[in-house]
Amino acid sequence: MTQRTAFYAGSFDPLTNGHLDVLKGALSIADEIILAIGVQASKQPLFSFEERVALIDEWARTELRDDATRLRTVAFKGLLVDAARQHGASILIRGLRDGTDLDYEMQMAGMNETMAPELQTIFLPASPSVRTITATLVRQIASMGGNIRPFVPDNVAQALETKFNS
Image 1: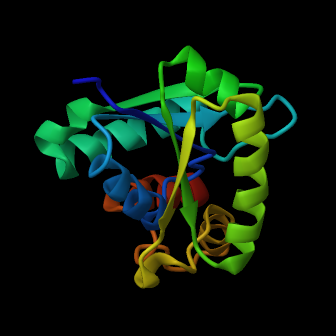
Image 2 (image 1 turned 45 degrees about the horizontal axis):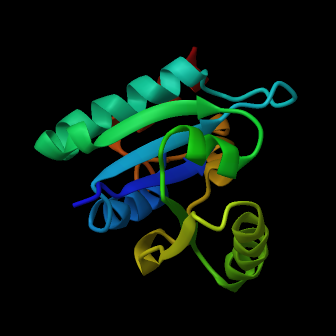
């Protein structure tokens, strides 16, 4: 049987409960998940690539236990389809929060299919309890001293609190 490798790309800056909801769904359909952190020289992230990997790994060891070995985190630049091919993925995972996401993601899926017909895009709707969460809003709330604990895992909340209280 062929191993199904899924490529789940994003900034994950920071990792949110919304990301984790989609990730858990992806684990139910793929043998291995590659969490691909997009790195752009023009953007200045709150957390470095290394910090994001450490936060993801810590969460995975705690929450996924044995399934943590099915998760790999990589950096990528350039086209998503090129990075997915490079890492041997056959599935692209895309999370959906609402109709606006669906419209955008459908356009992107169509373009990706033209460039890489061997990659199958799978849309995973976020659970209702996490649909409103965005990393941008989490960063804004954290920067103003608000309570971000309902929106991110504990280790990420601690890292955000440390970052903004320094």
